[in-house]
Length: 82
Image (cartoon, rainbow, N blue to C red; front, side, top):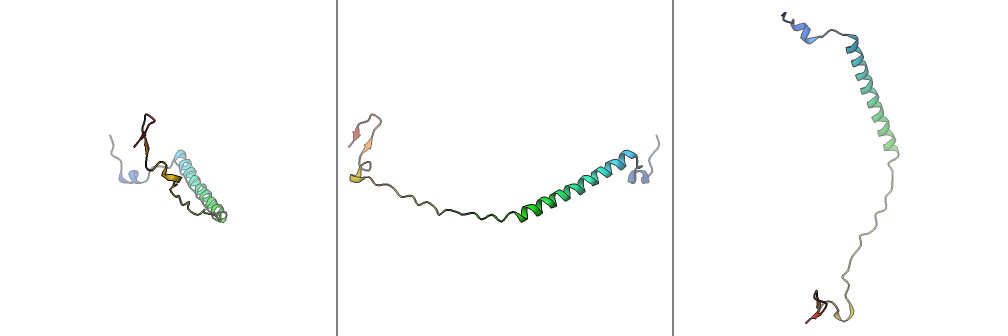
């Protein structure tokens, strides 16, 4: 078995398959970059959306008249505990 020279390790022969692979990889990279740039430009132009934020809701504890529910508790049997 013959040992490969170091130059063969660094620079493989350029076959048609290698050239087409490099061509399509470069084309994919170029078109992907252009597509991302186009999306960025379109999104930055149309991103002036005004959003109205409602005021926070203040919740108050409801107090029933006559203290109903605060002094007595209802047990599971339905009778009032004293």
